[in-house]
Image 1 (cartoon, helix red, strand yellow):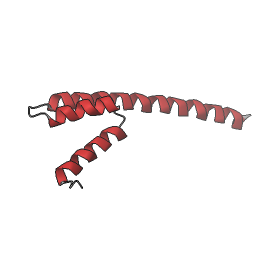
Image 2 (cartoon, rainbow, N blue to C red):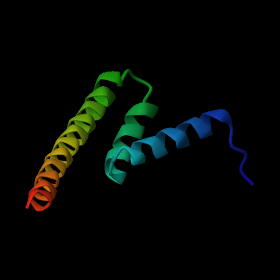
Image 3 (cartoon, rainbow, N blue to C red):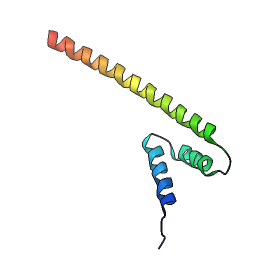
Image 4 (tube, one colour):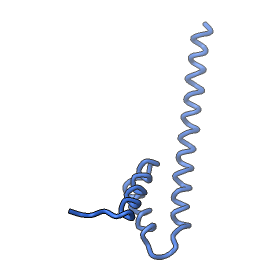
Length: 80
């Protein structure tokens, strides 16, 4: 049986968070390799997070546009 320490749990939590925010398995692996590297990789990891944030913002904008269109169609039906 393997004993997991706090560091293992912290890493697993990070992996799950990355998955939850939409990272692919490959992106998750790349991020974790940077995270575990012994040199300073903060800028690279921050760049990856900023890219994901931009993608999520685009998705939110697209969903808001869809909601506006849906509400307009509902309004037209209710008005007639």
